[in-house]
Amino acid sequence: MDLFTPRPKAPLASRAFAGDGTDGEEGTHGRDAPREAGNAADTAKTASAGNAAHTGTAPSTAAGEARRSREAAAPDDAPGAGDGASGPPAPRSGSGGHRGRLVVGACAAALTLGLAVAVSGQSHGESAPLDAKTQAAPSVDAKRSVPSERPSPAAPPTYDELMGRTYPLAADAKGPGTFTTVPGSARAPRQGAQLLSYRVDVEDGLKLDAQLFADAVQKTLNDDRSWAHQGQRAFQRISTGQPDFVVTLANPGTTADWCAKSGLDTTVDNVSCDSAATPRVMINAYRWAQGSPTYGDAIHPYRQMLVNHEVGHRLGHNHVSCTRDGQLAPVMQQQTKFLDHDGITCLPNPWPYPKN
Image (cartoon, rainbow, N blue to C red; front, side, top):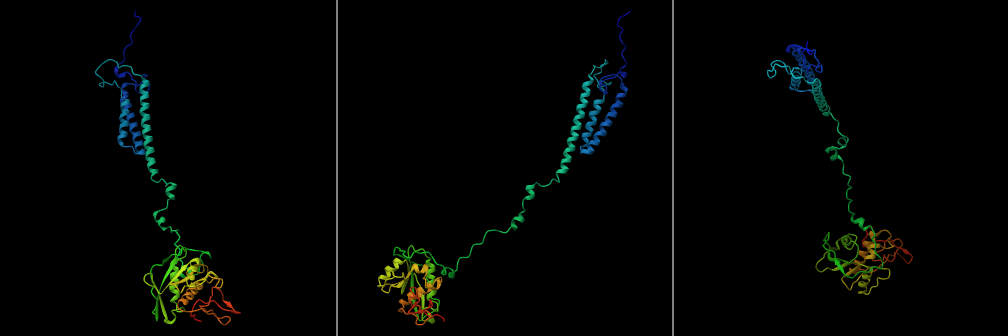
């Protein structure tokens, strides 16, 4: 009797193989494998179609998943599938096949989840709200509608405003004794029986408005209340050629020097003069800038009186005073020095021919 009796081999058609989900244990016959593979393919196809409908995956993806499922379910050593050997197939590890199917299933699930997230993000991203910076940014039209806050430039002061102001100048101011002619000219505004030409000079370094001074002389002399009254005379300003006289604005020291040339002392009371021995009618710049207590704050009419008084001397008029209390002082009265005399109070007056 033999100690070892070989076990008869089962027919190939009835032997079980790994890959049927039982970790390599026998129990599933070869004739049931094709049917289970078909069921697995149908299950995979149904799952893939459902995932494709949910995530928008292309049908080719579902078909690929079904093909992989059928390949995994089919036995590697089915008849006609090998190299024609009739021997039993090599044993195969059941755990390796199981892990393979797990990896394939995990990849499919990850792909499905990724596609779902991408589709969901696209649908929600289309209505994403603007960030705070974009919402706060004003539109172009809003920027254009904002009014400019730049202040408009102030209008320059008028002639009357400038003539109504006083200007700083020391009572003992001195200058170089040289002069600059105010450029330009001004025609007489009307004809007169006598046309007189004059020039305007201003001492160098004098910080007063030379053009304002020249304009004031022209306006004052050609006023009908002045020496041009009723067409008796007309005055024109020139800057070249030979004038009939030169109206000169100078510091107190220079004024005194030029007045002394005609025997006049202007240092007492710091006044102006007509230096008859010279072409110059001297206007004391201190008085022009600061005025006189006799006129108070009425600096504009005081300046008109200065011009009319000194040019009146050039025209041959001498000093006179008012004769009745409350009477307008004649323009040839020394109004810078006084308005009251001999118990009579005179009223300030800048014109040779006042309207009243």
